[in-house]
Length: 229
Image (cartoon, rainbow, N blue to C red):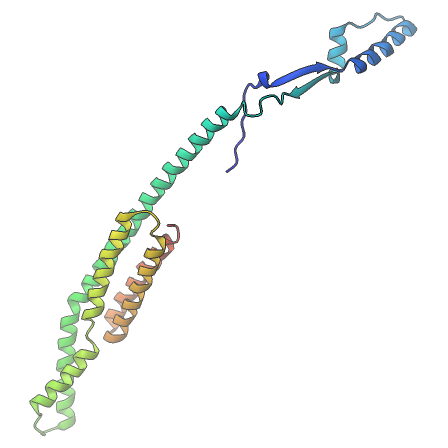
């Protein structure tokens, strides 16, 4: 932090005359006055013409004399800095919570369409098997087993549950305040990992579009988190 102090500090300055220099000036001027027949100059004219005769020096008796002024300015600057950081923190938290709300809305949309998506895939699987087997009677148990295998491969229940847990944890960290920057950054990495897993399991164009939106919000959140200690 840099600052400067200005004001009336005349009590910290002393003025002394350079007597030798003044005598030399006066002697030279007297000689010129006699030679040229001019009137001798007075003291005020001498000082005005040759100001270097008077020397201003700062007193060294009390180097801490201006500390009260410096301390007051420093306290005011620190208070302003704290207020500014507090306001910035509130703005960041508000922005992150807003983006988290958008994220949750997209996740809820994904969660709502997955059941219909899985039912459609199950029906498509039955139709494909019927076409492949023709008139061959399907073993209900075998068909059920294939459906279970397909459902297991596309089951994203765990990923969605973990994402909701991450949302709650993110909100808690923001409410805690303090040095949560690293925690939030790590949590965003966990968000991204779950979103990528969800996208790869479902492998659907509409879901892929939603997951791109999820990752876009996470990247914006990550940029903001970099400003949090």
